[in-house]
Image 1 (cartoon, one colour):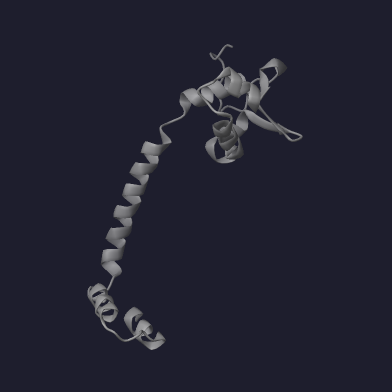
Image 2 (cartoon, rainbow, N blue to C red):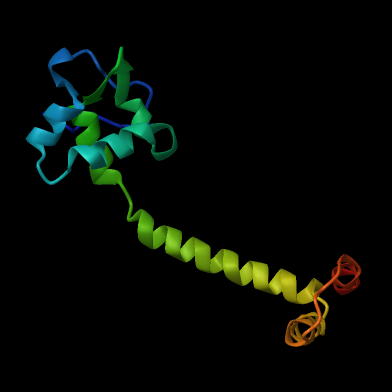
Length: 130
């Protein structure tokens, strides 16, 4: 398996070696560190994660081009750490935007209503929002 001339993101990737197109089960047997469930998850999500360039469905079976799969794994980023950073930034941005537009006494007003024994009516809720 020669990975020197393979670029997963390049449309010029050569898929002519039919011996490298393996079903998911064969990939799972060859690379035991990846379970069949994990491979199926990646394959089903292939259009979002970039695996679609080296994973094709023929009939009901999914086939993965082995050299491309190895390169895809090699180039795969730590998505969990990246998503964690992105979600932190999104929360910070949301809180900055929310703090600019939120009514300062809204939280205390809502707490007052919840602390009362009376039931909230639709008019009370609309008064809170407006």
